[in-house]
Length: 334
View 1 (cartoon, rainbow, N blue to C red):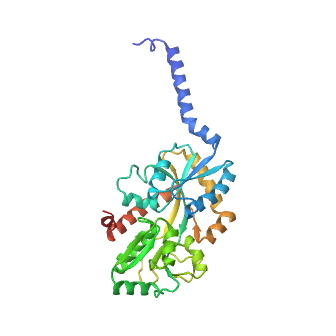
View 2: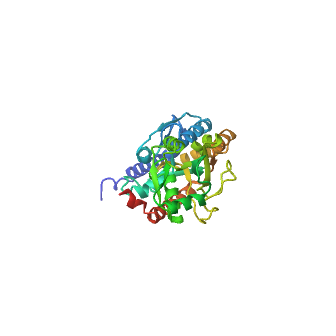
View 3: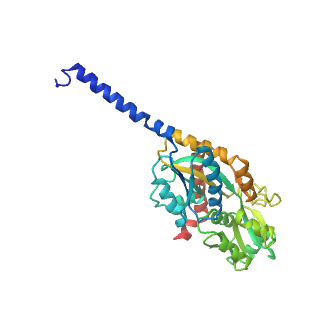
């Protein structure tokens, strides 16, 4: 029998102390949530300023900041196909002071870069889907290609001679092009650029005959009559260009590949803090100030529950894997 067990009062005192410590530990997250946010919140963006993801983040930054009663700061971590930005998010403290808005690259990186130092599903706290970005197949205004049927016919007549420009390898636009190449059984050549701007410049200069691009960067050139949109690769027609058919409508049922943005946080974020971020996001994304500006850019505001986003990331990653295998994209990368 130990000295402690011989003294009931000592046992009682120690038990009471342990209960108090446990109570403090279990209430810690609640106390943090009650005081949160006590300082500025950082929004990590995996691209340079001025791009679609950056614009969306800055629109949300103001509206969410008003709701949460704090300053929100956009931090651009461009380069590396978004991997450095993802690492910065995943390695951040799960205290609600660091979140990120990622694009489709976040999921495709899990396929195109299988040795990532993190798990794209297990190492995050999902918050919500944010935006659906319509993707267009574009040609110069004076092109002899006026429809998807024209593009397919010319590609079959001269295999390997038609290049299509995108903002980069592994982007949603690259996947859209490779999926079309596979489904239409044509030999078109991917020409990756470092962003939408250079790709569009070369399309206008006729250095490349076709470009696959998000609607945002393309809209000014479409409005000016410099480029022509032959189809959209997304599941639904764009509200901004309602007369432009989808690839599925143009003869390839089941085809779809658009771009999406999602909000995520580090793994282990306290549920009550996650709920506050989610609520602030919902209020912002549904506000007229945000919705009207997004729609002018051709971006479709959306939302989801955290669990819906988690399930989407799982299914979308598997879908991207299947497309990469079907189009032999991993073989091209080697």
